[in-house]
Length: 223
Image (tube, rainbow, N blue to C red; front, top):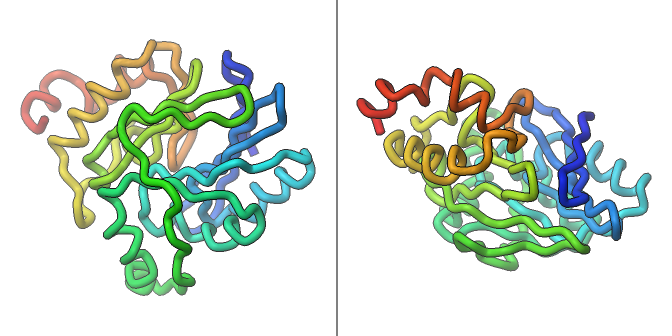
């Protein structure tokens, strides 16, 4: 488990698990102990155990997108917390197909619960005295979003430390992904901490300066 505290009083804890080594996040408003659960994957039990230990209340379950590794723990999360599920509507077909896609990987997944709220670019998700702002970032998935807080962002599978999200899955679009990263992530301050769907955290400035997929030559050719 890794933990970071943002400038706005939000604590971000990561829990990694499963065959895809996906990162599930618990983001807690430290002043009120109200939390949101982001992308509940295979590590959902560890994340929920931490919530129980802290006595936090989960106000919402937020999905950056609906690929199987980011939703495989969603049923358990919903049953335990009763919290509403948020997803961008462009990813609803991906969400509906997740149990079938799981079979392609030899996995079994229960039917997912219905979505309670559709996200839109510019939405603000409030929890306690903290906020996350929704930024629409298609490319890796058609309805992918990131959640930007004060000094940090949960970026799902858009950009990683030294890499970017894959675009060879249904609905993937490399030019769209590169535009999303340039316009919706690299537009954040360089010190912004990026919490990724897989692998270690990074910063906007580090990826701007060193990520080989974001250098001008690659971006101009493919983006």
